[in-house]
Image (cartoon, rainbow, N blue to C red):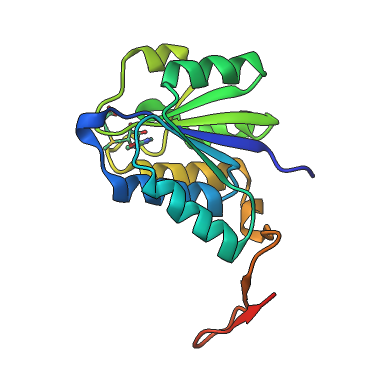
Length: 176
Ligand SMILES: C[S@@+](CC[C@H](N)C(=O)[O-])C[C@H]1O[C@@H](n2cnc3c(N)ncnc32)[C@H](O)[C@@H]1O
């Protein structure tokens, strides 16, 4: 079965910039099967970190800096990508996920401390990973995992410099 094409948008304004959270959102998106993340506002260091991760561990994950949430959502809709906004106020993930699994292209939107009200209306789905407040990194990880039915765990990353040989104890890493 072909993997769903998933892109991630992180909505956030300059005054609440948090590079560590942004980096974690990128790494989680990459590791769990998304192809691109759009960050409204981030330092270029995030790109350098990701380029290094791609070089070492493979794949072609992309971060795009500076595009406004409006333009990313508009573009997504134009190409038939359903917009899934993760928010504690939305419909329970477990109820919506069967429908999300049918989509071939998704844009998953997460917020920072403040999300513009308009996004709740622009989204095709407002989806809650429990109706309790927690973190955009956790919400994203669980949503990606559920949407892909766990298939993302088996994915191989092409053209890596290093590869891990899973082992119950210690570390085994080989060069490709
Ligand atoms: C620190 S929270 C901000 C919560 C804030 N009260 C709001 O929703 O505007 C940052 C982001 O984490 C995600 N998030 C937090 N809890 C969530 C939940 N229970 N379900 C889905 N997403 C959640 C949302 O994307 C939210 O925009």
